[in-house]
Image (cartoon, rainbow, N blue to C red; front, side, top):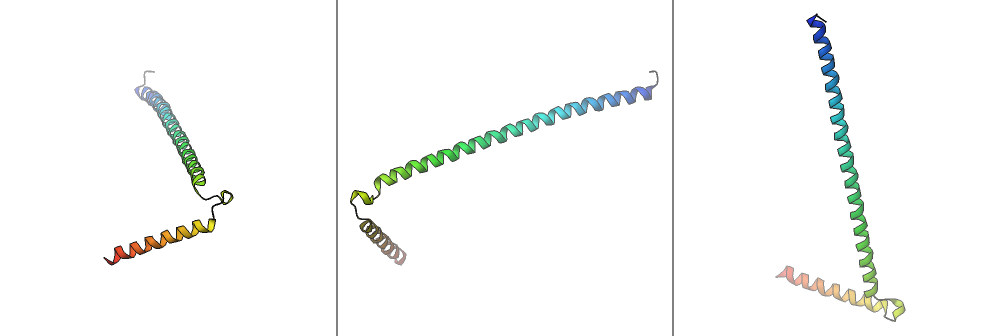
Length: 100
């Protein structure tokens, strides 16, 4: 290999191969990191959604314990009437606030 042009060709070829391998390794590592990050974020989102559903369910259970149960003897119509009266009071207060 006394020909410098031939030496430069093989050196360039070896350099291009080595750079290609390093680039492939870097891209693979980067994509692996992105995939891992995506999986972690999906898992965190899934856990968050589960927590929200659990809180909603426990709140619903707590609300069911405090609301009128027709079988407990409390009149449902009386509860509705009370709520309507409270809404009317809030409307009056709001109108008074707006007029002042």
